[in-house]
Image (cartoon, rainbow, N blue to C red):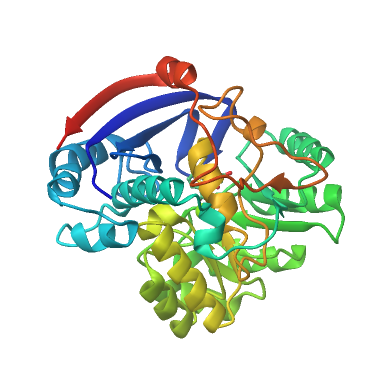
Length: 368
Ligand code: OSB
Ligand code: MG
């Protein structure tokens, strides 16, 4: 399609409760949304970068610059752009995968909307509903954590993920396991908060029958994960370390992980996310769809992605009310333990212009 105009909108949405990880506490979700206009279609993309470079090196102020000064002009200069061209067009630029992913997502939404096809159909997913998990932040007390988990459980979440960090790990996990019972799906995410010297301590998590431990060590410490995976009975899953289908292949070949968290933004887009999935299916490694507290736009795309056959574990794709009182799209609702996958053309969701207006804090627009 020909791209006539691109708009960037920085939004800030209040979270229903603070989200604390080993990196710190978020009170609001800040995201760059990309709106792209063509002659007979338009599309939305969402960038999963945060305010600060804590989860990864990307962060919104830098992403805004790289999008507005380099990536968007490059796309506007191309005569005709298909979603499958975006990665190649932007490949001279190193890194900035989240920014690239947001543009590719917007092109894909526009292209599929014009063709009357859904994200799910395009990606090759099947099924009308997804049974999600919930990612639970670190709390001030373990009693509070147990209460929060029990409430999510009562709402119908079939899998719980606890954020852990040194000083908030064995005891919270022990108490939540006791609350949920032995059969409940429970996993933990350290967001790289531990070091190789913590192997013996982390091995004590084996007592709790966890589905997996996610990203215990630094994102660059693949060999550390290999050693840890040998030591633990609990499967090691990588999030931050996996930047592409090739890096997933290599991490698995090394024995650094036996499960992979797929986040489209982290790997440069939904096309590469599908490639990560395909690689893992070939290697018989289970995958699940990670989350970055996305607005309804990213959530719509993640729901479609999570219906691919290799996504055999529940993802971090909770209902809208777990994150926001109000979103830029209609809310996604948990009913009977699952969420409906959008079926309409493109992402299958509408952006509410009034909500967008109220949540936006910065805008930029360019025409071809
Ligand atoms: O590590 O999976 C992570 C949120 C922001 C950044 C990193 C992570 C997360 C989550 C939340 O765990 C997942 C979600 O519900 O969106
Ligand atoms: Mg994670």
